[in-house]
Image (cartoon, rainbow, N blue to C red; front, side, top):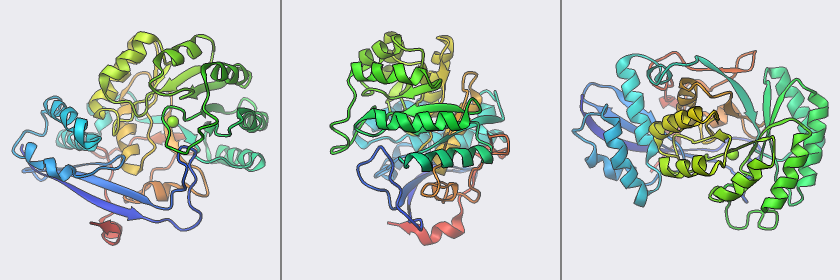
Length: 371
Ligand SMILES: [Mg+2]
């Protein structure tokens, strides 16, 4: 089998209703701008991938044409080189894995190890809602089947968010697992400059979170404050999670060496492909730690990370980005023929079709295509 082309197609989807106000951005999101990468082969198998914003990736097609798509470890080194000057090309690598699993006729999760065919989903919220509304939200999603929810801390005074956590915990008792994401791993100019936590603040927050049996605190400090994360982690019983946007094995090795994290969250579309995410899962397993990849990009990104997550032995939850009314499966997965949904028991099933197991909704996408 040989690669015949690498193409990108850009689609812009503008949902009806309110814009989405994610805590990790100082401006609202009014549309989803998604670039889908396609790797074509001479056997008619096409691999797809998408993640964050991609630029000019079609210009590197010549580096892959004529090569064996299944020599992924070899292509990975080339992609790492491309990553140095063109952003994050990892959806190409995801597309190669999609080809490999389609060629084998199995879901990618099975090709990678096949630990599970479903994972417990946590409802990953993205906005700050007023306290009463957030309590109602969580009770409603519990009614939909969710057994776990992740809340955002965002206020310059973390005690404000703590009140919401307190109210949610009181409302659900011990029926739900709760995670907290502080989103301090990275930030954009203008975003919460005043509220950034220093190490002492992070430790103070965690003393409180322990009382609410929080399963993990995500990104309490900057992603590259390896020592700070290690210090915070040493002083709390709450798991420290992070690594969603880190790049490559070497950065993760520093986390392991310093003892910075309990839960490793490499997103395969950002952090070095399926190859790195799978290796980090193994490194975490050897250290007695957890793996729970970030999935928040779009339906194709969720599809890829779900496959890796389901292949690992140490993944307790899959992130399910969902925050009604402004972030819904049909927005997130607008490019797919079928949006991902959890089952009545709160699990997200791995699609049983080969590869990533998803299909592009070409009929709908024709109207959303952009140059
Ligand atoms: Mg996060």
